Image (cartoon, rainbow, N blue to C red; front, side):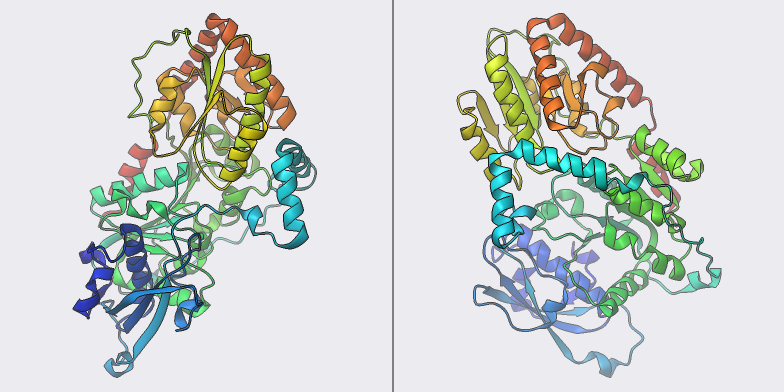
Length: 542
């Protein structure tokens, strides 16, 4: 990892802040390196003294924002140490102008603790919202769905603003740059997620192709995945905002001058996509891929942003036929600029596919939920379904809830309130999903929004039928009868009916599973994202 750093440590007494000697844990150490990466790239040739702080549990890191330039901090911050380093990025400035020591203070935040957006609401409004969500989560969701359908589905409009195509003199590409071939990656954050799983795989593919990955993430997070092996040797930059415009442009100038950036690959990164017009004005020859997974019901999300920025994106990569059809048919993008390449087998390698389709039911019929405890995944809706099945199932039934996340306290409280403690097992992400699928007879996906869930592929590989909301491109994989409305009450009614049918009719369960397997087989014949990305990266080599 040292060879990729755009800086050198000057004070050997503090080298422990960037090497593993126990002063910091591995996540904290990589956050320090990430902060140093940013400031070194934004300040070519400069010397910095980085005072490293640790905050209370649950606080977010402050690594690159304007606050880092103030050498004062709250009383509840612990000073871990300081790091003196010099940027090794080439500069044409006078040597004398680089002699000044720049003092910075970066805050690593505290021990990771999941925080929910609605917990951040203050005052009476926050208390009311939290109470309604906790005591009536399904009714709360009904109101959200009504608001979605009546007022917020802006992505269906046809008047998406378009900008004129960028036309830049090719002479701009003559700007000097480093010799190390690199790919600039833009990610949302370094946390568990389908887009992040694929992003890490592409980062690994870039390394295997001989590129240095430069990985920029732009959302507040403690970044638990920053320690993943795919990031070893990469230049990782976890941004914290706000960053002044001067610092933003200095950072991007540093990246483009220090490395030979041969391509840009976006994975749900709003910060980097919004700076593509400037990058294209400086280096118009750099190709840009934007990988898209999900069309948000409320705003269109990253798909909407991608459409608006299409004039500076070379290829819109989509993982499902639904997204391809939307971009081409609804938004009018040229077919040759939309590439369908799927993630059909991204996470199925560890799944035992040799088990029988029909399981021995001496024990209870087991229904599982696998996913993050977030508003998108709606674990509370699964728990309401579990309560319905506990009282109406034609035989013994058991439930497994596998995950963690910002709604964790709600999930635990609702399990007790609904009287599910005796029939429900909670499992954390530390346990392999393959274990849960091996124990399950049916998987339920209760999401409000999805692209095409990786757990659907995993369940199919394990021989488990999936009952799912009919969102995103789930219809590409799920049996038609097992697709349910995303609206809460119709979802519970239909999902409960289908699971009761599975319990009394193994033959019908097998019929649905066979349909699901046939769809998965057809899906697997579509272009594979990893193969396409590997070939694309090879084409970017010098």
